[in-house]
Image 1 (tube, rainbow, N blue to C red):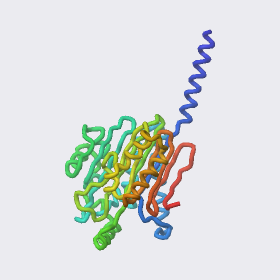
Image 2: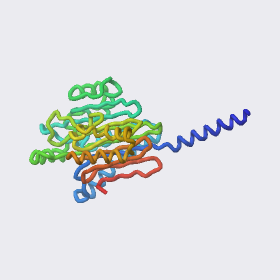
Image 3: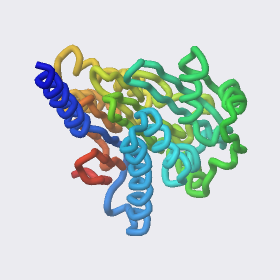
Image 4: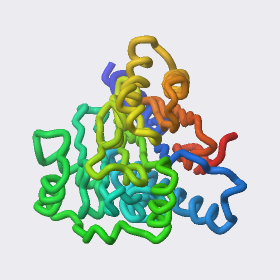
Length: 320
């Protein structure tokens, strides 16, 4: 009898180990949606985007592969894109109409539903890290403006002069936008699923070119540009923030999964269809707790990529 009990226990351990080995983990990212076409992309610029998106995916995947948390993976992945002038987040953020750079970011833990965000910050090198500090070091969800900048400094985050974010290309975009009064740009985001089955999502942006100073879009708004819940999915959006706020786009995807039993692909596409019908443009990345991914958008292209265990690192840019 004792031998039988030992054998049963041994088989149980083997089954648990096999189950752990089969757990899906990985991440999906976006670097903005808009008029991204093959015709407008030089080979050199295309290579630069592919390389940076690949670097970001590998950074987050390596964290997850070593047993790190989805929150750590999301923050580290987004920081790679914030530090690159290729994207409208952190370095390379677009200009306001007043000629300054005001950045927004948010992060959410799908396990606890805790969230943090900053809006209108001007001196934090990596707004996604400031957003996480708000989540973990305060009882608030969103800090804005000079208060958020001061908090980030108190927390020991990297502080830079506002000119750090500025690039010549973004300044030219401002001049062009002031002539047209209608230039829009994207955002960066990440959704990750770790080996423990926890989802996390984060989004970071410089907003819209030539926006009114003080304008806040969807990226720092939980439920609009960012949402994560282990019971449904993690979401990060990119597009015209005002439409995302009005439609509670990120939460709408999770709600359709929870209340209508839709798949992540069905729910994400449904929300983008509604966005289109309302006159908005953009896209989302979403991942459910089983590692299923959706990346619908209604623009000409969206920088996006994903990397799941057992699969290949994939980068996509144009409308298929």
